[in-house]
Length: 241
Image 1 (cartoon, rainbow, N blue to C red):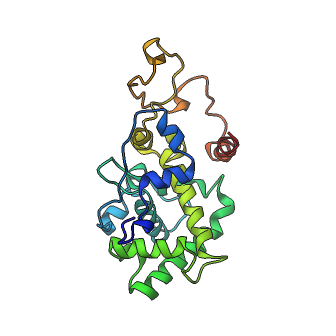
Image 2 (cartoon, one colour):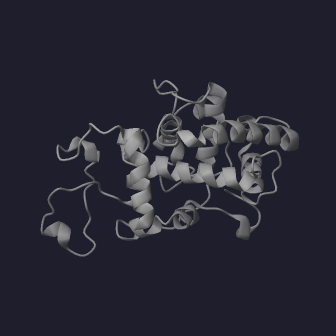
C-alpha cells in the first residue's frame, strides 16, 4: 500500500514474507521486486468483479462483500508483476469458507466489516469502497497499527484475520473457490501438482510449464470429502511444516 514514508510502505513481497510464502516463491520462478500498486481505487463495478462473475454470495451480504473485496484488492493489489487478490477472487473464497471451515469467523467478519465502514465514514467521509486508494490504505494502516476505533476486540485483530484469509484465497487450490485462473500460483511461480517429474524438470532451476490443474482433477485425490471441511485441516498442516 503506497505511503509517503518508506517505513510504512507495504508491498506484495513484504506481505508474502510475513505469511511465510516467500520460501515457495524462492524455489520457483523468481518474481522480482514487488512494488506497491498505483493509487487507484476500485470502482463499484470493479469491486463487484470477483464475486460478481455469475457467482451467488453464500454468506455475506452484497454490501459486506463489496467492502471485503476492496480490502482484499488493496492488501494484494494488481501491479506490474501481475494480478492480485481481486482477480484471484479471494473475497469469493472467504465468502464461501465462512459457510464452512471458517464459520467460526462469521461474527467477526460481520462486526469487523461494519466497523471498517463506520471508521471510514468518520475519518474519511465515505464508506470504505467509495474512498480513494490513498484513503483506503490510510484506513488499513490505522487498522494494522491498532489505532482505528470501533472494532471488537480491536482493529489489528480483524486486520490480521482478513489478511490471513486473503492470502489463503489468493494462493489456495482453486477447488476452494479462490486462486481463480491460477493467478496466485502464477504470481509465486508455483507450477502445480505433478504426478511424474521428467529428468529435465529435476535439473537445478528448470523453467517449469504450469499445469494449471487443481489437485482434485487427479483421480488420486478424492472429491468426496467436503472442500470446506478439509480446508482448515490443510492450513493447519501447512502451518506445522
